[in-house]
Image 1 (spheres, rainbow, N blue to C red):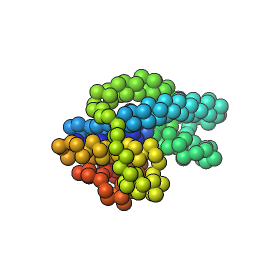
Image 2: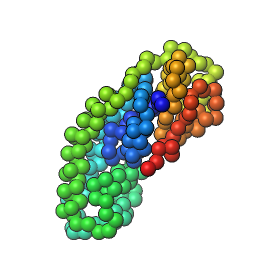
Image 3: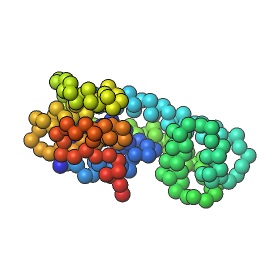
Image 4: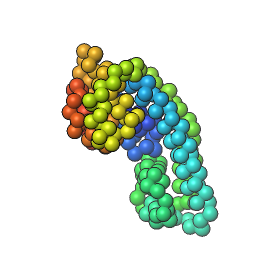
Length: 215
């Protein structure tokens, strides 16, 4: 079976700290060929840079916080309580870091957390770029769609689907019309997933979300 993947699937695969990582890994294990378009590639390159910078800053921020504290033992709830005023992205980072590098729900020493953060920072610098390079070998690039598909685009727009997302799904739709093999469209964007489901003008074999790729 073939698939066309939205940007968030690719980002989820590359960044271990992304909460979608395990879902993305299942996608690439299940499909023999995974396609993406130049519109996906362009968006991916931009998101990759922003996410790498954000994660670097989050690691630094947490290290700085731990370096100032006088507490020898921490648990995840205690640290989260200190950051109640921060956005969900940082709380998500804490959860991902804890699950991937500590895997312990009780109290843990400051030294153990600091060592794990050092490993996390090194992985971000080295492993992320390795996975990025590996990803490019796992994908098949297609050209952007040249047709407007005005009726479908208008329906998606009425559902408040962003222009960049509309272009991506229409790339996949156009490619699938010319492709002999059944094609699944995969996005982890809930709004886009629901929008495509509501429009019902697409030719895909199936439209899938993150909930279709669970361990």
